[in-house]
Amino acid sequence: MPTVIPAVDIRSGRCVRLLQGRLEAETVYFDRPADAARQWADLGAELIHVVDLDGAFQGRPVNLDAVAEIVSEVETPVEIGGGVRTDETVARYLDIGVERVVVGSRALREPEWLASLCERFPGRIVAGIDARDGRVAVEGWAETSDVDAIAFARQLDPLALRAIVFTDVATDGMMQGPNVAALRRVADAVSTPVVASGGIASLDDVRAVAALGVEGMIVGKALFAGAFTLPDAIAAARAAGP
Image (cartoon, rainbow, N blue to C red):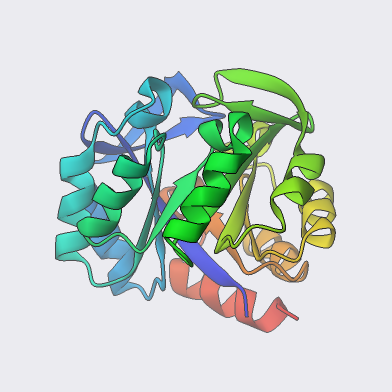
């Protein structure tokens, strides 16, 4: 049964949303990210996806205090991504109560490091694959590599990952629908559970993604903008899932 996972993106200590990851295209929704997380928890979220946007661009945790507030104030499990480049960062997040840690940029450059993380922290590591025009984007989506995103997913599939979060950069925050074809390709390519991210703008989108057999879907802008409610999205995903 696919899980609808609300997103809480943090920049400069506030809960924001960006269009396609562009810093100049920012909308602030909450001054305290913990308030956003509590809202989603109260509406039935089973997992909350948190991103340290400053960390993604700087390559190190920047909003650790805001993440710690979320974990301490909300009982719903939290996963965190953005700027995770070292074992110490992973351990620090897990120590404050984060359930899952998403690793992206360094995993592309050093897949053996990702493999070691999976061995050290079994069931707690998620690979974030962000794709732009079919290629893996890194460093907060500021750079696009020459690596094919589906091929990279296949390369990571043998690892003991908790999941792969697959984001289509072009659709993120645009409210124009997800890249269902790309999501289907990655879901068909790997046995690792896949979480879809990017572009979900309507309950029809929720149903279409749920029907792909993914483990879950991250929804951000649509929930904050009121396109639909979290309870309605959860119900739609359950009804449409395989």
